[in-house]
Amino acid sequence: MTGDERIEQFRKMAQANPDDDLAHYALGQALVDADRFGEAVNVFKHVIKLNQSYSRAYLLLGQSLEKMDDESGAIDAYQVGYAAAMNRGDLMPANEMKQRLTSLGGSISPDALIAFAQADPEPEDDRVPGPDEVRCSRTKKIGARLSFNPFNDEVGAFIEENISQESWEEWMEMSIKVINELRLDLGDAAGQRAYDEHMRDFLNLPGHFFENKTYS
Image (cartoon, rainbow, N blue to C red; front, side, top):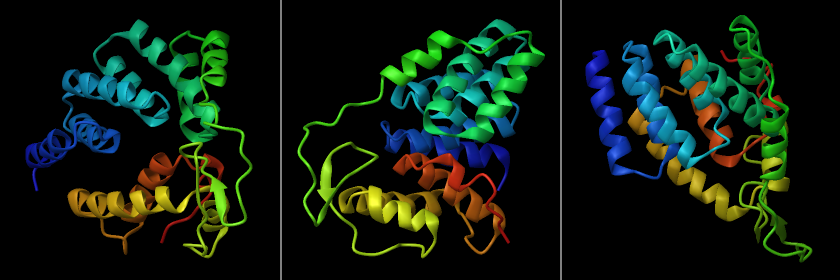
């Protein structure tokens, strides 16, 4: 499949799912791979509009702006993106954006860090979850508790304890779309990594679980 064919595939996916930040991110990434940075900038700005915590979208937005010689715009993207990444615990994109900020003569924005810390959604109520319930770390709402560890590892244990059955079922539906539309081969390391990245972003999982994960 050519670069243009991939772009059109992802564009159709994004158009069919206008509120799906993952679909638009995939389109933006394909545009970056094709060196179509001006188009990518607009797509990543839309991703951030849909999900202001999508830290990797800020990283690719900044890189695209750098390619267009817009250093001021790139600094702004990295400053806000660093705050978003740190707020989520996404250390890898946070560190890369910090390095890029330094190389451009920029600095961390304390105001952005404070703004993200204050923007965390509040629980819809203060009710304590029942024995078969959990307050979902993705939605902040109380939902049914999962009755199993989906991966039999520390990521699965976190999901079992912190992600509701409702959110997990939504991810199961979305994961089929991600695998099919992105043509991921889960027997391949790159496919496994891409799957984990999308799952992490969709379920709002802590980034540290994936920092040192090896793929074979």
